[in-house]
Amino acid sequence: MTAPQSLVELTRAGVSIWLDDLDRGRIVSGDLSRLIDDDEVRGVTTNPTIFAKALSGAGSAYAAQVHELAESGASVDDAVRALTTTDVRDACDVFSSLWRASDGVDGRVSIEVDPRLARETSATVLQARLLHGMVDRDNVLIKIPATAEGLPAITETLAAGISVNVTLIFSIERYAEVIDAWMTGLERAHAHGHDLASIQSVASFFVSRMDSEVDARLSAIGTPEALGLRGQAGLASARLAWGVFEQAMESPRWKALEALGAWKQRPLWASTGVKDPAFPPTMYVMGLVVSGCVNTMPAATLDACAAYTGPVIDTVTGTQAASQAVWDQLTALGISEPEVCQKLEDEGVEKFDASWAELLQTVQQALDDARTHHTPGS
Image (cartoon, rainbow, N blue to C red; front, top):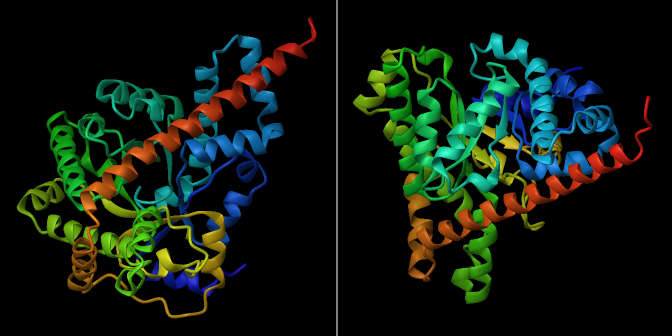
């Protein structure tokens, strides 16, 4: 089967298409392999919400492993780690050929540290090492949130030679701190004797959530000027982030790391499913086309991109002034970028906490059911 032309063109334009979804059914049915072969998918991201949905909606696919875990007396936390790392390990294996063909750049699968640890540096580092060891695949990425406490954990994890997906980035200022934490991690990894060519990292900038928050404030203001700015903040912030990335890639500090074999930390556009039905479903994909980025999209957005018939062109290069003008207008209306971003970060951690609690509850119920229905000697 030939991939849809729009997805082929996205890949040719330098956009690495990743799927923001995973469950065991996709793996065992061959659907994940089909997406790689037919839809240009080059990686997968997961998060607590995705796993909560997978475990509650595709429970039968997990029944045998849940039964084994119940038999062994596993705690709910141990069971969740075992179930999720099994999915990620198996997905890594599905992507292994692509991972090798891309010199380790693509073919990556992400798994996130327990969101309850988002404000705890040392505990995050310990779990990053634990998850890396449990998955036991070189093409795994450990997701660590870009909270203030997460930044040193990102550095320490990279310094240990572990590849990292930095997640929950909203502000330009925090993104600059992420770049510094990443470079420091690579410098320490080199000092520890790690091969920098084996370490990958992406920086996940959340896009649609920015518009959801800013647009609600614009609607509350209600003036024609305010209403005319709806749907612009997310793209403007991502495009400004790309400018920060480009500037960092011109620095002597990066050039020194590059000479040691390091790979760039690619900006990854996350939260790319539109929240407002008034917006085109491909808005956060076709509006952020630039060579060297990753776009991780839910299945519905991937389908919309496959059906897209418009031009696939660079929509980021040369947009810095216009993007800054958007935020200048928003600031003039009393919308504070630092305040919006802090609110979004706090809400992001809370949402993943809630999803994790749901996941724990789902798995605990499955363990209880397996123990209740166990027949001695069976």
